Image (cartoon, rainbow, N blue to C red; front, side, top):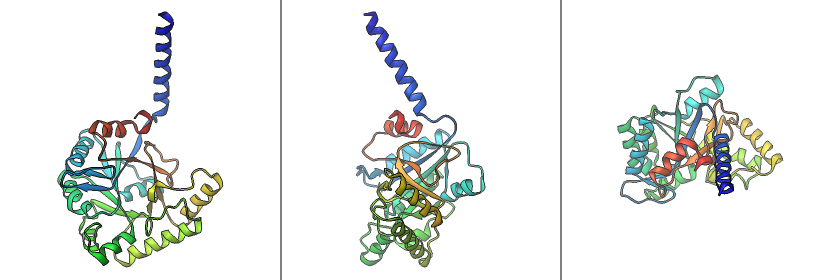
Length: 263
């Protein structure tokens, strides 16, 4: 009996110490990754409902998190410009039309800020087919730049893990050139498609990061589901928290509070 109690106590202590060490000490940057927002109640791993989004953003406001824009983070990295005490960077991938039709009104109502990583191939698809899946250029231009900023998410959503550094560099150049040609302002920030990059090969990773720097990328985003201790030690490998529609509100709160380490 005593041995059982001792073992439980030891296990509890080890678990406590592991969790304590897993959670970054001090201020952290939280980067939330969304994709689609449904106004009709549909939800899945890529899609949150409008009700979920509203509840999540109200929670962020209640807990004192301050939404920031990509330009704020760029200025923090390049110039040392101070960020608010509890910054949160809200991001959306791919540029779905519901980001304007559903997300943007919620953002305006709650006084939030968001950032959308764009894929020119998808925007061109909307231009050519008008299938109401992705944003059109007028919608991009109608969103208030003081509330919504844009970043890069590759030209046609190829995995950067499968491309050479030279091919990734060309993809980044092509993506930026197309957005510029269409009058869409963007920040020197890149979200890896699928969150993929050559992370398991140290030599390829070093070459990849050098290429990003040479391409003018100031901030690059993976997934990872962890909080980012500040100051940022790896601005080209910033981790994002994957916000899924098939997770509960309690899951959202745990992820925002602690990241993957304590999920």
